[in-house]
Image 1 (cartoon, one colour):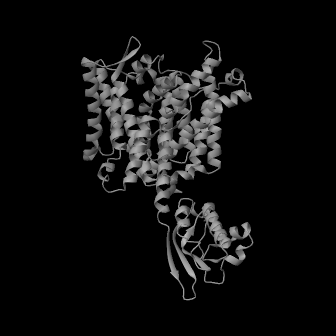
Image 2 (image 1 turned 60 degrees about the vertical axis):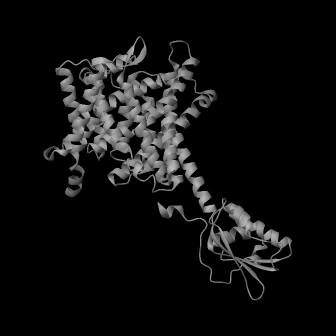
Image 3 (image 1 turned 180 degrees about the vertical axis):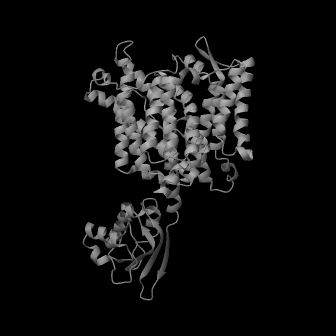
Length: 534
């Protein structure tokens, strides 16, 4: 028991300091994403608190940070807009449709976890992962450039003069502190991101620099400030929205898209954190935790959320490894909302931008440049494709497209590997020895190997070095047998797997005469037991 407690408590200090850093960086992110979705900043902040707290406690990946994200916000904006159009002017009905959609989104995510769909993240190829990481780093970088603008007469314009110089200077100072502090031997264990924020904030406040702050950022976006009360149940959602089939048809597509994007981003981030920490999370458990968190946040008036790669990287780079780091970040965020708004609003945006720029540098897979000439061109194409689609569209489209392209490339490459060695025995029997995988992609090449009309009356097909992989392969075998039979020739099949034999026997009893069993038959299985690999 003592050893167990010691291991759990060994990283408490790092978890607390990294949690504080993450909480400070969460504020402008949550506010910005709320503006993107077209809702009040508190809706984003409440989501960051509730989703972050629940997933930190019950999620499948300690150290991963969740909250309101841009990937979800860009989908929510049209939902809120359409919802508002259904009600009277000023009724703000879109907000309540959003809450209902987020709760339905959570139910879908829980079902995904129960059905154990989270394990499919292991099938994502490495080039897709690298493309995802690079694309997301670029997206984070581009999003931070917006902080170098200010609102003038309702329009966003670039900073000029001293404001621009101060902004650049404080950003560079933040990055310099984060880069240099770990290089000092006695300061290696200090939370460099938190120290950088404190130092830069102190300079900006004491010198009275004319720079954008968290408070001015919120007000420029149309918000009233960071302060608010404790989140309460939004029971009016159930009275304002008619729970009819028409409502379900409206919110279900949005809920499905949001659930898919949320799970893909969360599971991809989980995979990345696994690689960084050399540990392994539980994807299915994370699905259930994300779903539960979204049901709660929808009920209490939050905009929903998922894993945040930028904040998760900040947490890991700051030393956060346990659940405590996420819990501290979420609880502190609530404390900021309830009591600390006047102080947090004075933090210069430049300090948080500097932290995020360091996240970009740490997130981007710089090794991808070194391996350009060392990996197959198809893998390089997938890497670039996923990076580009992540920037142009969103993470879900990029990952799905990358997986599809990778699967098609894999199928094409394997389709070309089918071979047939042809020999004639002394008794005149022609033998086809099949080499390579037989599946939907290779059946065309497989069919071309046979010369049914010109073959002798006795033919054997030996599958010793082949793998029969799917129903298309079984159909191809069935059709070959039919063709030889139509020509009045005798065909024998050897070394088929037991599963393949049984399927062929069930399809037609004549295969009892075609398949040869009285030989030393190696056991090649069409379908392995998936549970054996869990």
